[in-house]
Length: 216
Image (spheres, rainbow, N blue to C red):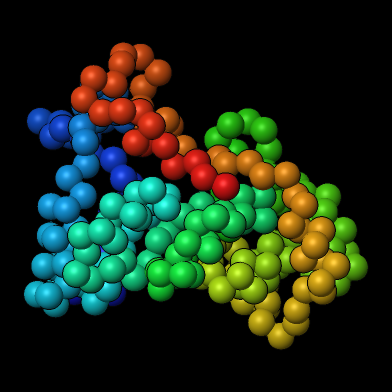
């Protein structure tokens, strides 16, 4: 492989070298401040050398993006974040749109049931009602809503029929009433930086607030 199409900083988090195979969850004591300027300049160099056609970030809030954009010669092309009808990222989407950063959505169908509270997208009565009225699946309604926000979906399935259904979202539109109902869905984030770390120990080198990626 000579290059990648897109190279991302996965998290606004930095860890001390493990000195061996990575272990999960990480120790809080191993979290250290992220050298935003140094890391981003290295990303820019990767693009300059032709190793990456585009560079971007993932799980960055507006606060984290402020730091990147303040020093960037090449702004991030993409910010890949958790985004779906149950976590709509209104503030972040507006921020990125104003600054030309494209938003890509992971967990567009709600992701895995990490917290044991079920799937806020696939179990949504609001989305189910719209799906029944439109003759669509709940997943298609969720993906169509994301598409209408100008956001790229990263959706995964190994089921051939679902793969086909996931592509059948481009020849119809949600109604204004549908969009209004979706805008009132209670918001709930699933993926948080705290999930990267053990419950034991303390952060000794970094302010935990700097790791916070929750922003409505």
